[in-house]
Length: 468
Image (cartoon, rainbow, N blue to C red; front, side):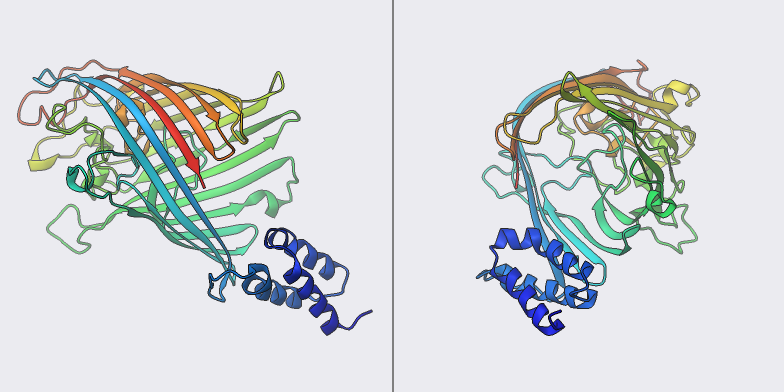
């Protein structure tokens, strides 16, 4: 057998002499094979991987990485959108209807770092600062000034720890880790907090036919004066969610089911009192200026206590040789109807008497997708129908297209098609329409404008997307 020093040198030269692409693709496989054969020790293999990442496998690159960085992946997602939107609101006013056509865009660009000692990190910049709304309108620029540059916001900044394959934890501003449909979580949402993921299937030895993960998140929504004895908002606002995600191979089909529970600490921040402000506070970047479209959107002030049972899932299968998926979602908020106050000490009124019906507390969605989008020429169609009760969800985090991002007390559908122009460029067309579930008259008094709700919405979008 060759002595270890010679073998180590030969292995390093083999990796360094390969092309950049081939080296990155085969390095770990080659070294793992040498370790398995007993030629290399695990410690030597790890040392070679670290050295090759910063020397031979990097070729003549002038990019220098810190020694702690084992892997860096940079990504981007740019979308150009044309849209036609229109809506009417329940409260009679001079401006109780609205129509608009606009060109918009959305950009996300970031990097994920794989570090030594099981550590990871990620940063991301993106347009718009609202939780579920990353699109900005061409011609507005900073502060609505035409011709001015657009801002990028820090939408991710997190550190992760992966001590083993079965456990990982992330802390900081990050993407939502839960399996969900767009009824509950929009893909654009980023929240501040800590998330954990445990691979229960691996720990229990369940095999390849059943994957089981426990996913939890603790998200801070607002920092308040923690020791202010004279205030009823003297604790920070938090949102919690725990989910058990199961994926089962059914032999020709795959079932995913992920029941969970979402809750919040009550009455601690205005951000938890309203689906308009959302958990992180601030305006959601809605597409209609308040001065144009009847003032503020529909406020769900009674959502300051969330006690929501969640049950999303899907079944994927082959349909005449084409990939297809049937999906669903369900939510029921036991915390709906909690009393509170709005700005100025006004009572917590809504558009009708206090929530009592199951319909107001419940949200559900049924949908289907036929086809998938992976390579040039791929085509898919999709559609879903949903009903979102007035007190079912904090809809600030839901799909920003449905009901124009104000989906409480709305029912409707979304239909669309997506085509791959290239592997990384897609063209998507969609039509979304909704109408109110309860046609409640607007309340009277000084809070009437604030508590007005939507009667109906329509949105047509055409998106050109590029991932890089």
